[in-house]
Image 1 (cartoon, rainbow, N blue to C red):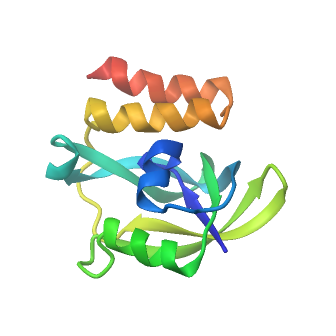
Image 2 (image 1 turned 135 degrees about the horizontal axis):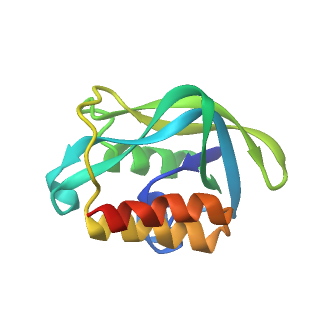
Length: 148
């Protein structure tokens, strides 16, 4: 099964810690959504964390990870599914190896948008570089750091 990460789980380091033994990863694009930072997180250095919000004209780049059921269960815990923080949704993506159906996590009750913490943003930028996202998208993420 596939998992689409658009936030800190794009980082190979973090994904390896959260889901040891996960499968390969590849770059993927989710159309019809935009990246938003609409959930405040004390656990992420006091900044906002990523979400995907439906937006027909936009897209989000991310990492598409091959995972097993045990990894999804672990991710559910990290994403606070049982607490109603994030919910799992199915998404259709364009990936390096063709199209794919994957699960992604979406904030259950989005709030006001705000800036991510520097440490959280560093993980997003790390993933963007590791998966060689288009320069334009990397600049968009880097601009968030400059706004802080």
